[in-house]
Structure formats: C-alpha cells, structure tokens
Image 1 (tube, rainbow, N blue to C red):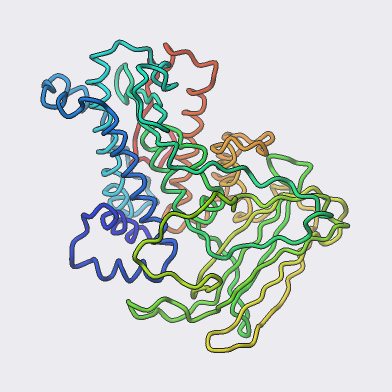
Image 2 (cartoon, helix red, strand yellow):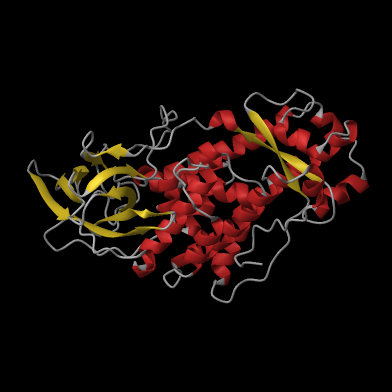
Length: 455
C-alpha cells in the first residue's frame, strides 16, 4: 500500500499538480504497485465527481461574479477547524496529511459557496434538498446530501455522483454443499478507504456502493509472519466469534509474500512468485454455510490507465492481503484449508502447500489485536454499506473494539480510523429517518479533516 508521503505525491499527480522532477519516480511506482494505481484512479474519480457537482449548479459561474463580501465571510466560516495534534503523531506525518486534506477541504468549501448562492434564489427546505426532489434540476444520478455548517446555523448540499459507483449485491451465505471452494484474490486495492475518508472529512456519509469492505480492511498493515525460508508465501488463519453475529464464526486469513530487495525505479518488484492461486476448501462437516466479506463482483473495471499492469496472479515482494470469512458452524472440526499454489520466477514447476484452519472456540475478546482491529474495520464497512448481513453491527462496538486494538499503529492509521468511526456514527444518527429538517438545520458538526482525536 502507498506510504503517506507517496499518497501526497500520488494525489498531486492525479490532479496534474505534481512537480515535474517527481513525475518519473511516481510513474515508476504506478508501474509496480496496483494499490498506487487504484489510489490515483480513485482520486481522479473523486475530483471528477466534485467537478460535475459544480457544473450541475445552473448559473453558478455568473452567480460567483456577484458574490458579496458578506457571502465570502459566510463561506469562510464553513472552513474546517484545526485541532491539536496528538502527542503520538509525528509533525511530519501530521503536516503531510494536512496538505492532502486541505485540498479536499478547499473543494468542499467551493461547493458550499455555490450552494449558498443557489439557496438565495430558492427558499427550500433542507430535507427537500437532501432527497434531491427540490427543483428537479439535479444532475442525473446525483443525490444532494445536507451538511450542516461547522459554525453557526444553516447547511449546504454536497453532490454524490451515485451513477459513478456500480450497483452490487453483498456476497450471500453459500451452503457448503453447493460451493465447497472459494477463490481468494491476492491483489487488493485500498482506494475505497480514500473515498470513505474524503466523504467523512467533508461531513457526509459516502455512497454505499463506493464502500468496499475488503479495501478498507487492507488499508491497514498487520503483523502476519514472514514465509519460511523455503516458501514464497505464508498464510495465517485465526478464528473467533463474529462480533456482529455471535452465533457465527469469523475467520481472518492473512497472506504475506517474502520480502525482497528494492527493484530499480522502472522495474516492477517481481522477485517473489507468479501464477499465484489461493483457495479455501471448506469442510461440509464443520461449516453449514459461509460468505466472503467484501470482494463482490461489481461489473466491468474502468478503462485501464497508461501504466503497465502485472499479469494476473503475480505477487510482489512483501505484498500482503487479508480476507475475512463469516460462517455458520456445524461442528468443531477444522472448518477449511487454505491451498496455495505458485511458480517461482523463471521456473515452470508449480509449488503448492496447504494450511489447515483450526477453530479453538475463542470468544471475540480473546482474539489477537490484529484480528479484532480487522473485524472492527469490517463492521464499520458493513454499516456504511447498509449491508443486509450487518446483523447487530454498531458504530459504538466498532469504535470500542478498534480503540482497544491500536498498540500496533505504524503511520497512526489506526488512530485516524477512530476519528472516522466517530464521524460516521454522528452523521448516521443525524441522517436517521427520525431526524427532522429543523434538527438537521440546527446541527453543529465540527468538520475537521486535521483531527486525529475523538471529541
């Protein structure tokens, strides 16, 4: 996954603002790292969504020329407020994030200004704007979501381009009698985390179809062991009770490729394995039904960019992947086996080995910190998706679970995640059907993309 410094450069590259001296190194990164390419694609899509939202407001350009000083101050009042930096976050990390988030904040303020001008022409109810039914001139596939001002009263709508996110259905529970094997893709992007973070820091919930649980989970590093000396890939399996459905079991499969030397800037980091396949082979005596969390099929992929891509099944040095499987137990036998197969570079022979999963019957609190944190991220994603399989998932439990699983936190990513859960919980409560238009208009949220602490 891209480092925080890389994310800053990738964002500038996606928006055409990167210094020319940095372009070759970024393009080399894009050539070798699928996650970096996904990050750039998602940043461009997000920028395009905001641009279309601006264009959809009729007469916006003409109205901007009439903006008064008082209106400028009103838009200025909606700026995000800077919060104190936590003591365990380095200044370098903080300022790198601040630069990236400032760009998103600037775009949000631009949308806010146009919405203010539009509202002076039509005295509409905030709820009418929120449902997209007012005026009938919204862009096709666009929903307007009310965001209360950070200071004082009033609200402004932000456009979500729902047409840009392909509809999908959650993976259903599969009876093992009908489907006893399940393929796991090794390559997983993390772009959905950027989509979710951008929306929440702007003060709105992300579109449900833009939330990919597997990408949220794989945004974070985990402490899976390196492969043995004679293996290119290692698999680790841990099983405990499922927090949002206690009668079910939750399995975490962590894959990690062998580390290798850093490649030349223009050479992909293939020093590990090719033709990689990973399969779960489920035991029908131990598992009644199961479902893979995330990894849904969502239609054709977007058109490829200019960067070269690896052959499907290639795995780079140090590459990792986490998959979560929820299942209904039938006995205490081993529920499944992880079957790995791959070829070493330059060879035609296939190497294969299997890892049998054992379920010792752990309660959820007894699971490892990495397991509990990954489960909290998944629970958060199921809630944002409004998944039919979220059972009794809650933001409160996801927050409590994640907060207690942050001792391993390179880059302070887990600390930032706590703030995102808090924002999602607040926004979800405000958007609940019982919330009236007057309550929304009076709400006073703190829209602070710089905050890494809970209020």
